[in-house]
Length: 256
Image 1 (cartoon, rainbow, N blue to C red):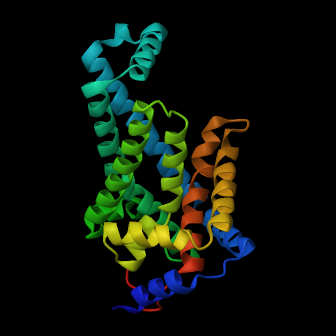
Image 2 (image 1 turned 30 degrees about the vertical axis):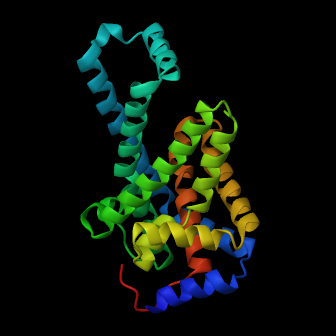
């Protein structure tokens, strides 16, 4: 068993102390270093994604069909999906989100580089698409989303509509350390999910408070000019990194 896994087992057995201020300050300091660069990358990617999706839509239905009424009709159609159509829609959404998950790992890696004053580039955001971690990041995200959506859809089917989203949010919260555990502790997808649940359970209130603050901070960009959210959103990924760094830490000879 490696030193890192020994550390994880110790945390699961004995718990740990976590200071809200220390984690927040580390997240904020790293955020200031990556905000502009990461924000530009998120903005550019969002624009490209919008263009691609719009182009595909126009190719299928034509420019004339893109009216406010047709878009509203599409929204109503999505709300009333059921049976096979709903499963296909959810499946495509899960697959698409899983394929994008290495970008989150790249943003977390950017925070790692920022704390050590290491240079980072555009390639840093996309770096995990070409490493051994891609498969594990993809599988972990896929498993989490399948579990979350399966529970939510099952509860909706039985008529318990409000409980589904709450459980989905809880699953998202307890798996917040999954990607950092994969890329920094070299764990498999299943191991990372398991350890994330166990570690978060040791200090759920402080970690929840940190996540709430990070979400509120990232939403500040909507004030005045909505484009600002692209430059405040990296704060969430800086917070993920700070949590991992303060809870688990790094070996001096760790290679990423």
